[in-house]
Amino acid sequence: MPPMLLPALPLLLGATLTFRAVRHALCRLPLPAHVQADPLRTWRWHNLLVSFAHSIVSGTWALLCIWQTPEMLVEIEKAWSLSGYLLTCFSAGYFIHDTVDIVISHQSRASWEYLVHHVMAMGAFFSGIFWSRFVGGGVLTLLVEVSNIFLTIRMMMKINNAQHLLLYRVNKYINLVMYFLFRLAPQAYLTHLFLGYAGQRTLGTFLLAILLMLDVMILVYFSRLLRSDFCPQRIPSHQHKDKFLTE
Image (tube, rainbow, N blue to C red):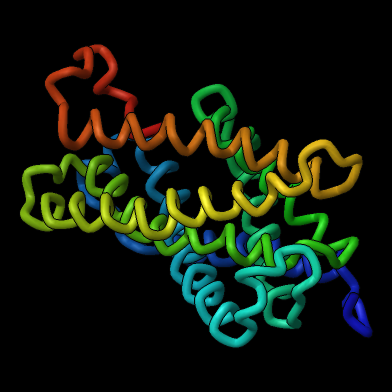
């Protein structure tokens, strides 16, 4: 337990408003012609720009936290640092912002998987924010944002119908490697650590349940990624129109 717990609500509010301001600023950037012609693609493009910014900052920040406090790799419940605590607040603010953005933009039905993911992620982060426990575990889960940098580039190029470019072909292989290194591997390692809480009536058991559900989602997303980028002929043609929303 740290000697002082920073006021959580102002930090969450500040992070959420920061991402709102970032979105407002990024919306001023020029749009690709193919994106500009479709209101849905325009919204998704802006949404992904904010996600891209969050991934760059939080992925780099998570690596820095682990470098500064390496005990987070083994002591997921009690390891704590001010930087790690602020990072969980920062990312929780992003998930709050993105949830609100999806809902007020009337994209809840098309993006329901994102909403489910965000609710579970916020439930996990709040354990570190309000109870100052499992901050180390929260930092480890944010290693996934390193992978999300390349995943977001991929999705933005698909929205812009740029799959024919060399950059897309190079990025899809980099994305696959990063998916293994920063999404599948950390998730498997965290699941192994959290299985130690199985059968207990503790916060760790609650977080284990969330983690197992996220494991299922990650494996489903991975199968979609492989099918879309490496076995595209197996995707029914009627799915191609809106598959950028989930793939």
